[in-house]
Structures are given as structure tokens and as C-alpha cells.
Image 1 (cartoon, helix red, strand yellow):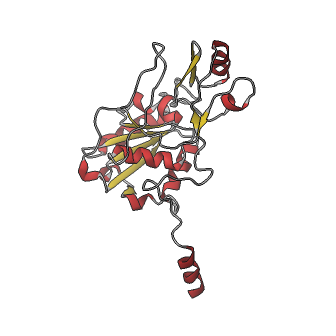
Image 2 (tube, one colour; image 1 turned 90 degrees about the horizontal axis):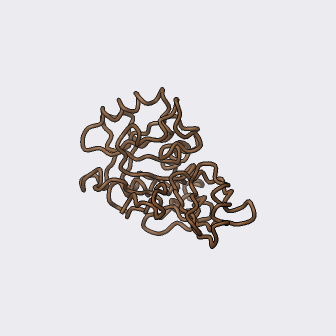
Image 3 (cartoon, rainbow, N blue to C red; image 1 turned 45 degrees about the horizontal axis):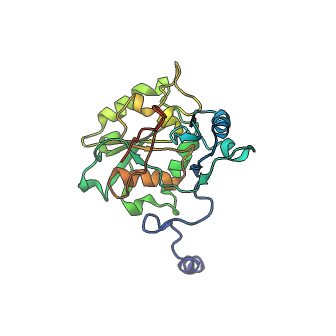
Length: 253
């Protein structure tokens, strides 16, 4: 036993230093499309590759809706015109005018997680927040087994029809003040499932969403950033949302 104790002391703490320091370890993020193109032909070609409509041609440029990006990499690796790529992870965007929780919740937040029809990918990344490397407890975030003790509702999945009522009941059982964090492309826009007779096409179709975290799935650090945004401990990312008038519409400050 003493041998293992000494080994652990020599190894030291291996948890990420984020958010105190940027995380530079390789493989922590799949990234998002972020580059510009120089011709209308390239813009149209890139948009035609995207299976979820995350890319929309606008003249010689491409409007990027990260809420729909499923990390298929077709716009970056299929040859011909290619999008630029950024490898960041601070994607959490505040989509309402005010923080869902007040200053009293900055260092102690209980989270109820609901799987609203997720394929398992986003839920797997959420589970990583409790492992020793990400260790969300050090930042004051805790998973709650009951909505009656939860401050934040974290939802993954496009909200399938069988999960609509359970999701609403979970939200209604939470005490005020409360907030909703939607995680993953399916929870934000329906992802590859879209809107159908069995899918709401996103959490915002059912509940008021406070913070959105794009990605399919988003890496654990992106989810952690979204939680920090919800309590005002990190600045919100910019989430332009769907193209409308050719200039994009800002969804978050």
C-alpha cells in the first residue's frame, strides 16, 4: 500500500488547470469550422458538402452556424475548397439577456442531467466531467439525483416525443431560480435528426434555454465552459446562429 501512496505523491495532481490556465494537451477538442473562402464557387461547394446546413453561402463568404455542426470534417478534408479550422473549446454561449443564476451560485451549483433522446455521444462527454482529469467538483459543480435540489438543468438530445413530458416535468420540479444548459448539436438544432414527428428539433422548442454548447459531441472542456458561463465565471462565446439576412444574427453578447 505504501508503494502506491508514494507513487501517487510523486505523480502529483493530473487534473486540468482550466479555467485558471488554457488547456494545451493534444486531443482535447475536435474544433469547429472558422475559415473564410474567396469565391462564390468555393462557398457554394463547401455548403453543398455540409449534411446539416451548418454552412450557408453568402456571396464570396460562408456563414457558419456552429449550432448545426456535427464535426463530420467534410468541409475541411474532402479536397477542393476547404474551410479553416479552429481548435478551441470555449463554445458556451449565453442566449438570454441575463444570467440564469445569481452571484450566490457562482461556487456551488447542483446540476440535473436529462437524456432527451441522445445517441450516447454527448452524454458520454458529460460523464467525463466527473473523472479525475476534469474534476468539476473543484469548481463547485455537482450532479444532483433529483430536480428538486437542482439549480441547472443540463439537457442532451433533440427531445424525442417520449421525452418531452418527462423533460417538462423535470424542469417544473426545479426550484427558482433555475437555468437550462443545452449541450450538443442535437439539443441546439436537432442535428442530423432535425425536426420531425418524433423529434422537437432542439431543447429551445420545449424549454427556455439560457446557455448553448455546440458540438457533436462537444468536448468536456466546452461543456465545462458552458457551465462557467451560466454562473458568470467565464465570458460567453459568440454564437451567430442561422443565416437570415446575409449578415448573420448575433445570439449572444
